[in-house]
Length: 199
Image (tube, rainbow, N blue to C red):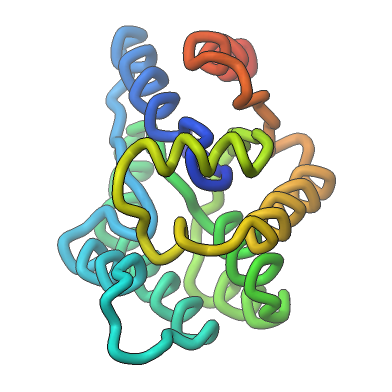
C-alpha cells in the first residue's frame, strides 16, 4: 500500500506519519517512511535548494515546479517503486497533491503543466491520501513554534489560503482516495481518525 500525507504548514503530518508507521509495524507490515521533496541523497539536495531562504536570486515558479519533479522522479525510481514491488507499505510525507496545491493553486501555474509532468514521470499514485486540514493561522502558529521558517513557511497567509483551497478542490475530486482529517484535534484524535479509515 502507498499512503501519502498532505496539508499546509504545521498541521501535524510528521507526528501522524510516525504514529501510523509504529502502528503498521506492530501489525507486522514492512514499512518505508519517506518524504517529498527528498527521500534519496540526491533528492534531499534538491530539497535543500527548494527550502533555502539564502538564494542570490528569486526562484521562478517554473523552476520550483521542475525541481519538485526532478526530486520526485529520483524518489520514485530509487525508493517508492522498489519498495512497492516487494510488497512493502510506503508512507510518504507529501506527493503529487502537494504540487497541485502549492504550485498550481498557490503559485498560479496551469494544471496542464502538472498533468504533463504527472503523465511522463509519475508511475504510481497513492492508494490513500490523508489530508490534514486546519485553519491557516493555527498551522502557522505551530510552524513558528518549531523555529526558523523555510522558504515556503515564510509565505503570506493569503498564499496558504490558496493552497488550502487547492487541497479542498482535490478532496472534492477524489473523495474515494483522499481522506480529510480534522487537524485541529490533538495528535491522538487525528491518529484515531486515520486508523479508522485504514481499518
